[in-house]
Amino acid sequence: MDDELPLRRDPALTRHGAASHLASESLDSYSQDELGVRIALLEAEIARVRAHRDRAAAHRAAAEAFFRPPTETTGS
Image 1 (cartoon, one colour):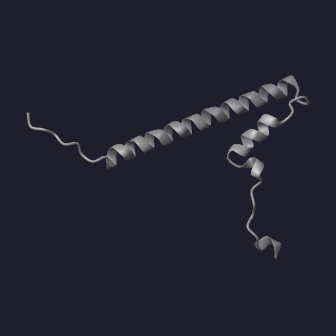
Image 2: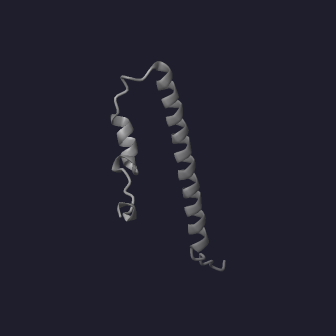
């Protein structure tokens, strides 16, 4: 019966929660190598998010240009 209930996502892993969780995590137990790996992973994630943001902005600009009413031209 429990397997019929919808799965709930951990709030710490949703939207801003994941970033907040990472920002509040203690780094004391990490070695220098582990910190380097963590930095590389975070930088890769930042690049992925920026690329997605840029694609979304380009998509929106294209849609706005497509659906923009034609401008009136005056006869000169």
